[in-house]
Amino acid sequence: MNRDMEGANMAKRLEDKVGIITGGGTGIGRGVAEMLAREGCRVVVAGRRQAPLDETVAAIVGSGGEARALSTDVTVESQVQALVEGAVETYGGLDLVISNAGLYPRMELPELTEEVWDLTVDVNLKGHYMIARHCIPRLQTRGGGSIVFVGSVHGYMGGSDVLAYASAKGGLWTMTRNLARTYARDQITVNYINPGWVASEGEVVHRREPGSPDEWL
Image: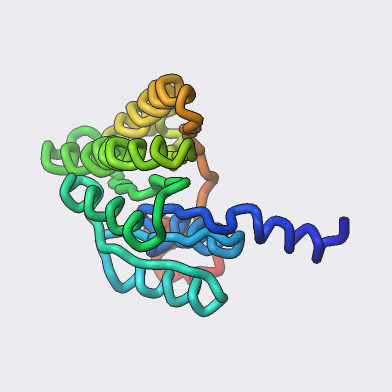
């Protein structure tokens, strides 16, 4: 099969499917949303900041895809419920979910306040639970589907300055395995992926040496 034919077939792999991508305004989330749209998926991108979401939607629509943006804080159940209902009302159902929203503070234990701990765990663990809780019934109605949680190697390796983040991702890993075992009976797959390093906005700021250009990354 030549590349053009292969690309055309892949572009139809998700035709008429409906997907939700949280953290869809930047970084991994935006990249995944654009990729899914290229393969025919109708996507709903969610995140706390409206402007990046609108940029993602504009890029997808400009390339011939279908997309909608819904501002959502995944730690607030009413907003997650509205997100899922909005996706179903707009596109008629739900087939796949990329649960990607995350928060990555870096500080060692002496600087790690209770406030930062709670926020980090809320976003990186509770937020994924909220997504699963409201999306799984919709996937069951559809006769099956897929949830992908974006995890981290820190979830089982840890790190000196990522205690709260690593703890939450470790909990997410366990939650993923539990949900996968529970909902396999409903033809719902639940997976946890560990992306490599990505030059997202936050990472570029964090890793750039003082006075150095982005190219050094």
